[in-house]
Image (cartoon, rainbow over all chains, first blue to last red; front, side):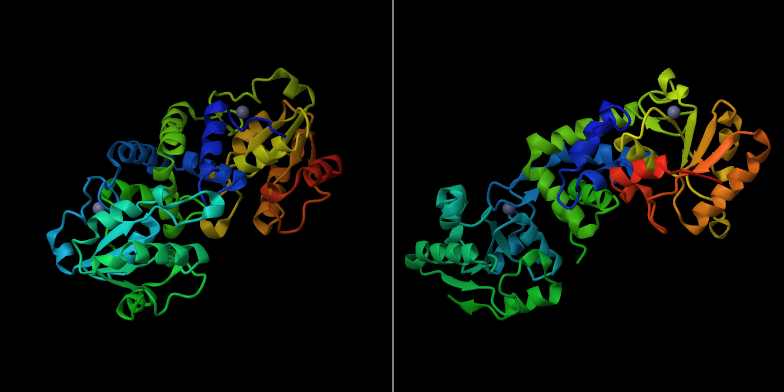
Length: 200
Length: 200
Ligand SMILES: [Zn+2]
Ligand SMILES: [Zn+2]
């Protein structure tokens, strides 16, 4: 065991790739062998793409989206503001899933997680103050956090914080299965969930 | 659909990562989000490791192993030659699996695949001539190709080519399940398979 596979540079690449979600030590090794076999078509382009992405990636200071500009393309698109809809999601993956579903010209707010007292995650660990700060620019806040216990606790906390603002607060309702995660839903379900949103 | 997730640099990174074995479009996106979240701890080190590996990786001109020197560390280690054993495998992944199993100080020959007339893969597409050329430096050639139809066809072809050489030809036998692939076997099975090798 533990003999190096092909030198320290290769061993280190295997170890880092193994830490990606969906990969492990064995699939990390297979990925590296695949990269080396496809050196010109895949490995060199991937190395270049990673370097470019490292240099370009920015977290949007307004909404928490990941883009190459901040404010992000969505936040700086005036048509996105006209709907008056701000959808609150846990994670950038959820924002991207809603965008892929083509749900319309809306804006987003990425919380960066959910409240979880057991894990020591309180309101100040999420972007809830920033949400409260920008909410008044919108007609309606649509809570799109996942239907987990922590997600629903977070939704209630946000609703309480915005209770006196007079802004309509709704949630994605129809079609989101209990315990399900937005990022795993198909586009039709997500579109339905927005259309059938209900009042908190 | 098809809306870009966070700019062309990010979109391109997702597309390239999605082409790794074990990943797809969804897990590629998740991997990229994970990388961006762990920019300092994972994304930047991975970019640097890829650049280093691109520059360092070499295919061993003797055996086909992947290393950062050619001839590789195994081929240039004189103790590896003393056993007189040369194990023939399909793929570098198989070589690495045998090395992880700690099967002893042996040498290898990576064929780069198996004979497959239907896919147009003939002897000249594999490193069979190179194997025949170096076989006389060894006392015994152990055929360690996978127990598939193509693998066994390849084993017989190699045996025929070496028939007049007087070199002992054996195969990994005990413990390798029919239809199984070396890279998925545990170390004990692989060690057993070498110990119980049988004559062709
Ligand atoms: Zn933004
Ligand atoms: Zn070698």
